[in-house]
Amino acid sequence: RMRQILMVSVTDVTSLTLRSWAQNLCGSGMFTVIYASLPAFNGVLSYFFLGRILNKMQWLSMLAVIMGLAFSAEAEQEILEEEDGGTAGAAAGGGDVSSSQSKENTLRQVAFGIVLGLAGAVF
Image 1 (cartoon, helix red, strand yellow):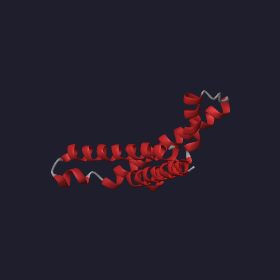
Image 2 (tube, helix red, strand yellow):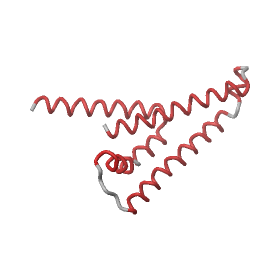
Image 3 (cartoon, one colour):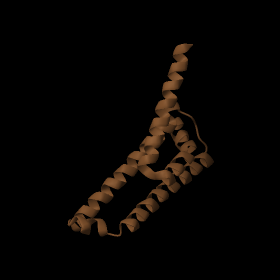
Image 4 (cartoon, helix red, strand yellow):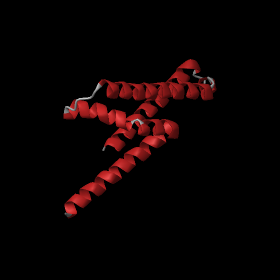
C-alpha cells in the first residue's frame, strides 16, 4: 500500500515539474494551448499504443485541435520575430546570422517546452 502511494506521489511530482519547466520554456499562451489539446493527443496515443478504434468525427476533431496548435506555434514565431525587430543581430554585430541563430534557439526552446508539456501531462 505504501509503495503505491509513493509511486503516485513520484508520478505527480514528476508531472508537475515537467509542466512547470515547459511553461517556463514556451510561455503561458502556448502552454495553455498545449494543455487544452491533451485529449486529442491522448486519442492519438491510445490509437497507436492501445489499439483503440476511433470514428471519423473523432479523427477530424483531433486533426482540428492539432492544426490549431500548429497555427498557434506559427503565430508565436511571428510575434517573436516582430518583438525582435531585427535589432538583436545588428546590436551583436553579427547581422542576420546572429539574429537567425537566436530565432533558431528560441524555436528549439519552444519546441522542447511543447514536448515537456505533453510529457508532463501524459505522465
